[in-house]
Image (tube, helix red, strand yellow):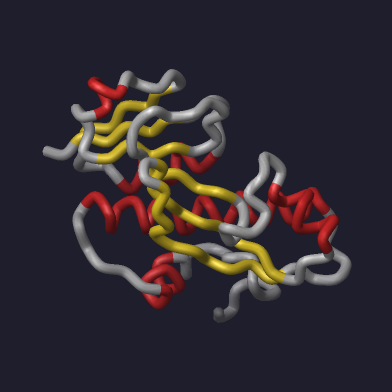
Length: 163
């Protein structure tokens, strides 16, 4: 049986979305990072909404298409820059290596709160799919992500009747 740790500072629905994917695996939900030595007890450490640096390799997510808007408030940076596209980036932390990116188009009348909400929803849909594929050493591509998110709205359309 594989072991997974979900590391977070503040609870978000993404934590539950991740937990639901790893039903058959042993999952620890942690609010404090394990030591580098203890992190090797896990097959995968997944970081979401964690505010401290992690001293070992973990899977993390950022609310922009890195390397753009790599600060602490990427949603605000995108709005202030007048960007028309942003998204999420899922990456390994040490060494930093991008694993997946998923775009989100920004309408001219999109407000900050609306953008944050859409990116959070996108995170809840896509992050668990990518994490599961990585844990199981399975390949995935954008088609996998789109098909996997068909149960909810990705934020790139008006209501997800189709992608």
